[in-house]
Each structure stands twice: as structure tokens, then as C-alpha cells.
Length: 83
Image (cartoon, rainbow, N blue to C red; front, side):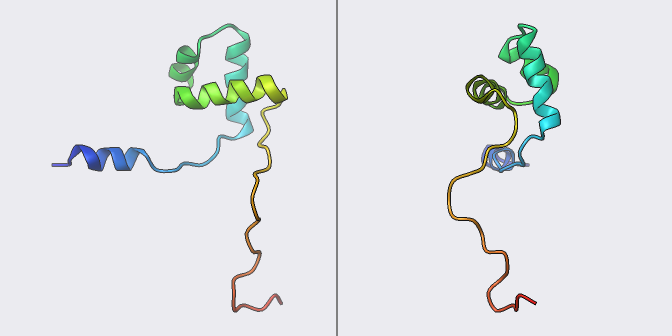
């Protein structure tokens, strides 16, 4: 039998970003006056994600992934030659 904490930990893992092809239908539904709850239910995406996509679309008028701040990762591992 699994405990409640095990189930929560399994559900709260990080996931990958939504692709542009999945963000488009969110904006399309929004333009058709669907609620965030309805969009979330129809596309099986969390309400917080739907809300974030709509907010960023209103601010930036694009659904493309924006560059992140911070130092970029190294291209090669330490100890390996670049050649």
C-alpha cells in the first residue's frame, strides 16, 4: 500500500516545457472565450499552466519559449578534451 506522501512526491516532479504546438490551442480556446477551467479540462493541462500561457501571451503576444536568465551550462564536461 502506498502512502499519501509517496503519491504526492510522484506527482510533483518536474516536467518538460510545453511545445508551441500545445500552446497554440490554449490561446485559440482563450480567444473563443473559454474559461481557464474549461481549457484545462479539454486539453488535460493544469490550470496554472493554462493561466501562465495566457498571461505571457497577453504581455508578449507570442507563445514562443523565452530565453532564461542565468549562466549557461558548459558545453563540455570537465576533464574531456574539446576535440
